Length: 194
Image 1 (cartoon, rainbow, N blue to C red):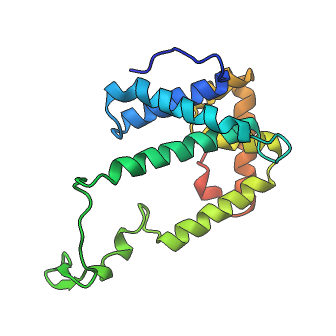
Image 2 (image 1 turned 180 degrees about the horizontal axis):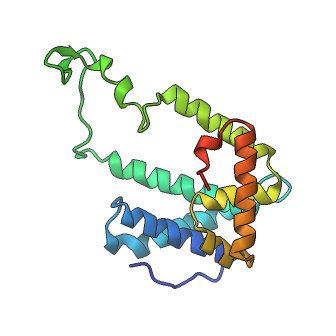
C-alpha cells in the first residue's frame, strides 16, 4: 500500500495529509492499490510546484493552503480518469427521451433529473447555497477553529492530536465550540449530534 517514505522538502503535516488522502482514494475504489506510491509522488510533486505561491500575509494558514492544493489536484486527477474516451459512464442521451418512470408510464428524462440531483434530495442550487453558507460560517470563525474545521474534513481527532501536539480532549472541546457556532446560525443539522 502506501509506503512511509517522506520527502525531506515537505513538512510532516503535508506528508501525513497526502498519505491519508491516498489511503482514502484507494479505500473508496477510485484508484487501484498498486497506484498508491505513484499517487503520493504525484500529489507531492504538485504540492512542491505550487508551494512557492503560498502567501503567509493572506488569511489562510499553511494547513489550509495544503488541504486546498491537495484537494484540487485530486479533483483534477479524478476528472482526467473519468474523461477518458472509453469511459463507460459517458453516455450521450437526450433529456427529451422517454424513460420508465417506475410507475408504469413513460416520462421525459428531464422530469426525473431533480429526484436524482443530490444524495439527500437537494438540488444543485440548494447544495451550492449550503456550501456558500458553510464557507461564510467558516470565514467568521477564529483561526484555530477554521484550521480545525479544515482538518476535520480529512483527518480523525486522533490524527489531528498527533500532528498538532494537542490532547484529544482539547480537540473535542474545540469540536464542541465549532458545533455551537454552526448551531447558532441554523446549520446545526450538519455538524453531528454529540
